[in-house]
Length: 405
Image (tube, rainbow, N blue to C red; front, side, top):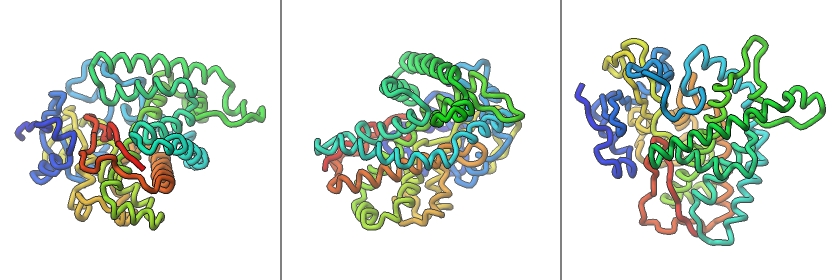
């Protein structure tokens, strides 16, 4: 298969990756592409093939299965769920899921509403703001940091490190941010481990601790506790993925509604459409364009093409989410789609690596959207003719969203 350049024009791709994905998808479900990093990979764009590949145990996440692997390297911090396979993945996910429960998430609903109201209180007198900086980022940063027990004073530098890691301005800056975050999280984890265990805390009649404290002491009856690299990786994944992607979802959904006045009016008239709005925003502009790399442990047939063992596979969530074989009129943003149908989007992945934080992201986004739309009824784009300011990154998010009310 001919090697084709995935991104022939970076600015055009950043502004609209969907057109490029549609072009490739129309030519076939899989392509041998040259990535912007100058690495060759297999890009899967067909929704059926992407879904199947996400659950294919022959495709592994551990980079050591890559044909080109020589050492760990890179900016990865610790050892997290996106970088391991069963049986390690099974043990890690079970330990985390035991603490990161739906009950714990739902118990935060009132606190998330309080945070959203506080942010709107702070920005409402101004009459104008960058909604990304003033609302879409601060809300999930505060939520995840509070959930994990990151002190208030440490949240500003954490946000700066995170932004640099996911959308590097330079190799040196990304490396420095990774080192700084590693040192910070290592110290924070040690502080949590030095505290009494959750069982001891509850036995003493004290309030339940934060999630990172629970993870620092987590172990099953027949399981080893999280190792230092695993705990570091878990903290990194939950903190960064837990706020970057949710911030992207909130700002993208707000942008889509403000650019579609009829849809916005329909939502304000009927809040039962809110769940479907969040799902449609995730389908239409997924917070991440692609899943983590997969590496075949044997030659694998994908979408009619044999992918050799060890060659990287990129599963395009964005392309799958707009596959006309699955979604009618996929390039139309429509909050009236049946939420049950829209929920088959792949923005949270599929299979054993399905996003553990999906319930939290959905809950935060729904609260964030309803709060700002109800409390700022005149909310509008500052310049409705200006194109969206997307960040160049595999994470699909706005750099800014200037609004008035």
